[in-house]
Length: 110
Length: 112
Image (cartoon, rainbow over all chains, first blue to last red; front, top):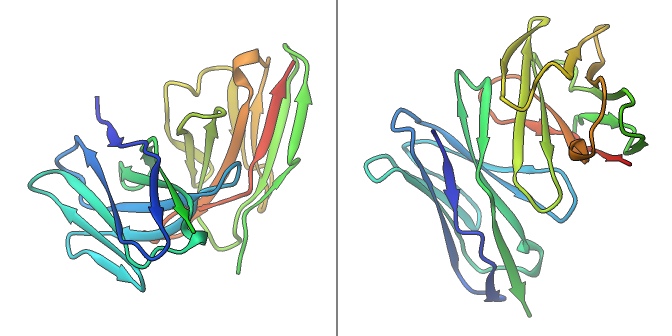
């Protein structure tokens, strides 16, 4: 069974800290992923895509390690507004099927 | 910014009743999806739809579920005979390429 695994947390970090989450996956053929964030009782919102070349957007950096079958998300200079659940998402079947991780909860504290 | 619109935002129904959840995907998107999220649990894929037919469906999407695109804009999810365990947030999503899925704000379904 193909799964996407995440540490549920919560990760409690002070404002300004750097925090990193990992997500492991079991389908060795997967080549692309997404990180989404989800606020409480809201819809998931796309944060960034992750391919073998990695991706960086401001304070956020995502990497894909195909050899060890995990993806990572690094958040630098954490803001209070970064508090959310971060979801690892694996598309498959030509993006027709999607598997979500359980999410990692981040709480940034003042 | 284009949005995926879902109605209603909250639906309460009695067990055994039929419900139809409605979605208006982003107009130039070609692929449509339904997901559900039971409170406190992870988002689960239900079904994908392309070119007026189902592309993929999960084990959850049994004979009680159906999807339809009755016109050029709406995308609906029907649950024929609701059970208590169908209570969840239902998200519609759409995409056009490989840039990710855009989600609607969801319909909270409560079965009593």
